Length: 188
Image (tube, rainbow, N blue to C red; front, top):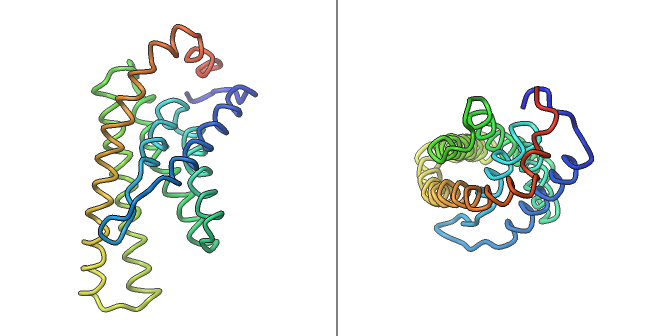
């Protein structure tokens, strides 16, 4: 997916995936001081379907749009854009960087690494905010990070299960309709 042309079809598909990320993020429920949702699964699905760059853009823009509409400050919106982009980018790079990108084991591996990338970035953000922005003592920072790590890992696990299963469930339809070939048109 290195030299992929940007077509109207690809831009439309990116926008659709960004919209899906936004909408799925609306459906969340609180768990242990955080929120659990399936938006990460759709972010990973963006990386799977669109590859690293376009999938990353769709995931990052959809998530950042949610944060902006929800009233988060510019810095948090930017952090969300970068971290969700990174999750889908890593997933897309692993999946599309090798031969046979449609194998379930390769898709699952790409999703695991992508999801853990996001968890690591989220934990880094939590540490920096709690220690340097809010000035909490280190033991309070540690407790906050543990409290946020558990729901983050639950989100990651749900995403790692849901994204590959959904992708492989729709893969035959994408192939038979010609959409998969069209998404990858222009590959080098």
